[in-house]
Length: 150
Image (cartoon, rainbow, N blue to C red):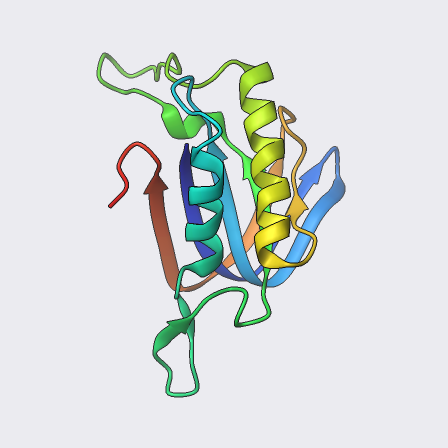
């Protein structure tokens, strides 16, 4: 699983002009699932996201997690995170998981994030054409890949 995590002042996602998820102060998580991903990736990735110390403490140092900061999480599926641009100019998405596999992993991560965060997680609509609006705070953007657990 590949996640692009952005610390945001606000973020929202719309499908057909209807807001399906929105947060103030928190994390926007764009998630791509590949065929090689499995259920063991879910608790690891969720814990990483919820415990990332990228929010300022009283001294202005990034030393608090989204949970400690009382922030929210907006989870949006994005298969294009597994694009390969090795050949030519048209990206290949062969590594992206099939929709039925990716949806199950996305739903499982959503549930795990809610459990780890201790509150509901806002979300987009899996497989839909979405419009995401955000104000990146910092900017702070982090990429996590479960295949490369640094």
